[in-house]
Length: 285
Ligand code: GDP
Image (tube, rainbow, N blue to C red; front, side, top):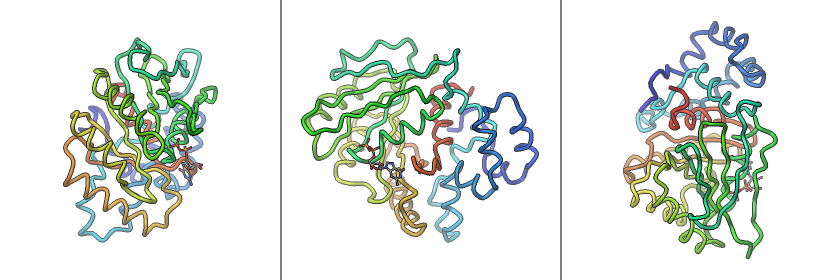
């Protein structure tokens, strides 16, 4: 499932210092990413490949359970994906609109769409803000007050794809979820991938299971993103990662086998997630 042209990632990072040297001088690498590449290697790995960082603390016989390198882009690919997420005159990244019903959703000029779903408070707005940090003008709208109608928010990423931020589900928003999210997920044909956010501190909750069942029932290709990984000790994070990975391996059909751990605070995993989005929407080919 690796996009064509993607080469091994973390290993290259450590075996080929020249790659980093070349990249940090390359014109195709943004200033921000060039700075990232100057981090000490250990820190760089933690930032770019958090799941492989977690793997280092696993007993060898448990490592085979984790799908670590299905998507394993090189630092060059990650740099290219960062460009896709960088707002420039020729690559406008904007909030487009909000909608409460699918027939109010914008008719987007590019078919590729990725959407983000998750329980309220899972860290969805923080993650979307982190993904758009290279487009500081983008305003990620949040409506959290009880009683406020929750909306789907649409963001256009240049001519590349659209990001849809779905209303959070759970305790306060079951109706929104069924009426809006379910209808959207069922009917939107140009939906390339659904990113289902799970809080890495508490693991998969009852309401997450409802969303997982829905993705499975509609045969949607989806990915589990583990949020807030900075909040846990290494031991707790390892335990959660293994539990969730086991669930994905044994109980799901449509879920991408590799987990994507992220932190909106330390930015760990954010570059890799950008790269995965760029890849599934055909922007790294
Ligand atoms: P949403 O309801 O899913 O949009 O969640 P928010 O993005 O508003 O986050 C809910 C709470 O979790 C807020 O207090 C955030 O500051 C916090 N939060 C979100 N992401 C992270 C993260 O990666 N690390 C930490 N430590 N806190 C986070």
